[in-house]
Length: 213
Image 1 (cartoon, rainbow, N blue to C red):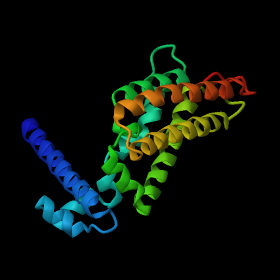
Image 2 (cartoon, rainbow, N blue to C red):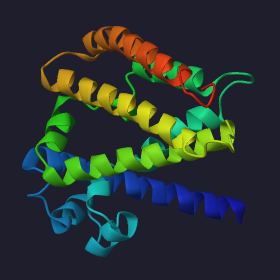
Image 3 (tube, rainbow, N blue to C red):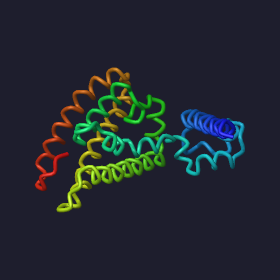
Image 4 (cartoon, helix red, strand yellow):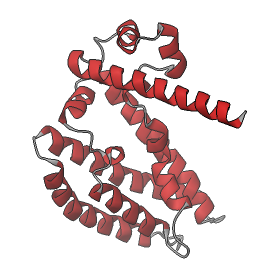
């Protein structure tokens, strides 16, 4: 029974990946707005309903790692090392993702970056995902550093951290579209991210509530 369920789940994941890959290829070739669900279904050799069952929103065919993205900052906080401050954990995990050229922090390649930049729908969806990422971070900070005297403190910290995170993501996309390769982007962002984190750390250390992030 367990093996059968495992095979079934594996088949579902393969179908999901196939649909997403076909959709991304068509979006890059034709543009997101110009590509239809019917065309994606034909390319993936599945029914149109199958596409919508796996991806209820067309945007999620392109931004299919949205759950990893929206929970990324929060996970860095909740899974931080023993005794590690949240801001230190966030800096460490971002640096690791930067060195790995992780798509979640913005290393999507020029074709994909251009596809998103040229699509008002995807650009709007990306903003929504950044907002969801901030909300998840605020919840994680609230649990990590409880402060009953200033309930807004985790939300304020999350807003500052998320603003920096958005800026770094946008910077990687800008450099990608400008024609820089990933190694060059990494070198630029290592310096810029360190400077931004220093400014962020100073702002959070001056929190009048005395909260240490």
